[in-house]
Amino acid sequence: MCGIIGYTGKGNAQKIMLDALELLEYRGYDSAGIALLKEGQTQIVKRAGRVKDLRNLCAEVKPEGTCGIGHTRWATHGGVCDENAHPHRFGRITLIHNGIIENYRELTEKYALEGALVSETDSEVVAAVLEHFYAGDPYSAIRRTVLKLKGTFALAIMFDDQPDKIYAVRNVSPIVAAVTKDGAVLSSDVAAIVPFTADYFVMPEFHVVCLSPGGVEMFDLSGDKAPIDWQKVDWDVSRGGKGGYPFYMEKEIMEQPQVIRETILPRIKDGRPDFTAEGIPDEILAACKRICVIACGTAMHAGLVGKSLIQAMIGIHVDVVMASEFMYNDPVVDKDTLVIAISQSGETIDTLEALKFARKCGSPSISIVNVKGASIARASEHVIYTCAGPEIAVASTKAYTTQLAVLYLITARMAVARGLWSGEKVTEFIEELQRVPQVMERVLEDKEEIHRLAGTILNARDVFMIGRGLDYSILLEGSLKLKEVSYIHSEAYASGELKHGTIALITEDTPVIAVVTQDKLKSKELSNIREVQSRGARVVLLIKEHETMDEGGEWSCVYRLPQMADAFMVMPASVVLQLIAYFVSLDKGLDVDKPRNLAKVVTVE
Ligand code: F6R
Image (spheres, rainbow, N blue to C red):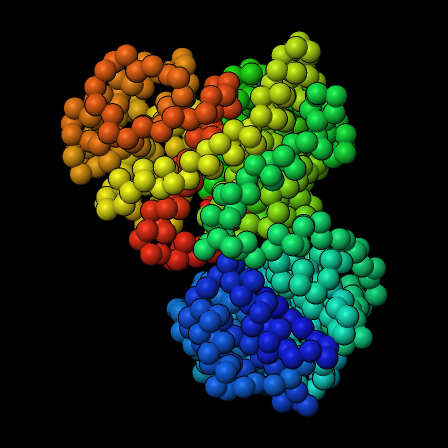
């Protein structure tokens, strides 16, 4: 949460900061600010609101300089107001911070800061502690300050008397840095680095990086120069921007066939799933006695689909645990438990902490991550990257379906490693997986028809989504998507559970979206749909093409999903649910890509 940017060089730092903050805004958008350092003078411009509001303010104030830091905030400590916006300044120190300083109250007391602070933030306290220790040597002040901090932090710091220099240090919260043609840049993620260069590095924790117009240097906390592990951005930079769509969410939904191809094709060799490039040995897949998936939100919903697949096809027990609850439920994981951590950003703090705990318990681990070099990827024994490319819309779409694609590959490789499937069965499964992109393309061609379906729930206050088994798992995700981008209250319900209480809420004003894609559950699911229809509910039904509905009755809205093997029907059905959520949000005139109160990367517990 929170996006940070730092730049020093020959360019116009104001413009560079504002452009970068726009790219980082999906990380938090309560307030934004920049600070520019010029000839020993630091000028701060900040305010509550979006980056566009900050841009307007900068047009009036006209701050100047070639060295600056910028921040876009998701509020944790202190409300959303101008004073709490970053950068914060204390004495000769100006800084921006992403993370949470847990002991800021103790520090306030210890360094007698009460009355001297102008904001309610934990971040300003760090600036004050740095000022306390600063006697001309930034490294020493940073080292001494960091040793006092408890919590997570990515800090970019300017000292008034260190012209053209930006210092950075981090624990948990990410920072990447790069050299540009005329200086150096740092950021919370590569999205803001890509306009400058394809070469970057992920700052290791508890190291100090110094950016100057001459480049970047890194030191460990004992002051020794540390080597830099350079990496290359492997995104297709030309795919940046909205590509002509009004919102990133639509663009990212439309990209799914392509990114699923890119995720699966390199991992299929001679018609079989293959993780040689990832260095994942078959033993890890063959030996585990159970699997524990840890993830949050959408990524956890991907895990639920993985659970259904693996339990049905491999016959081993899979738990899917919300990472935010993992530590509080006395987790039982051991060397026989394969832990699979799923995360688009690779930075979700709860998932990261749960993974670290599981590794301490001796569990082998694989993470499924979208962002190269992210903390979860690095904390995991093995990593499989989804090739979704940058996902900018806060609501996850293409990251989810590429996570699913990887889970199909894992299931198939597990079956091979355990000698469970014949060659023919493997071929059949992989061929069906390879058909997913073209099936999704067919759904995407029906975008306008799905737009009309979305119209049927546009004015609803509450929506229920019902299904069983795999259908229920994808509805949990469909329901989350609708809630977060349209603000309509929606609940996914296992349709067999309705009669146990919830059906009391069904009236003619409660539209129900039902998904029926599993042959073995069809007749039960259709009966459950009848039950809600009898109570007046209007039903939007997603069902396989060619499926008969002998039960008769009225179907006001039906979408026929292109046929796949039942285990793969989640793919086309998910695209329809994503589009429904998207169009409802669009037609309500909401800010689809930046729903209220949310942020793309959740680095606080
Ligand atoms: C919803 C959404 C979130 C994320 C969750 C985990 O659309 O995107 O629920 O899935 O915050 O984030 P990652 O995958 O980055 O760990």
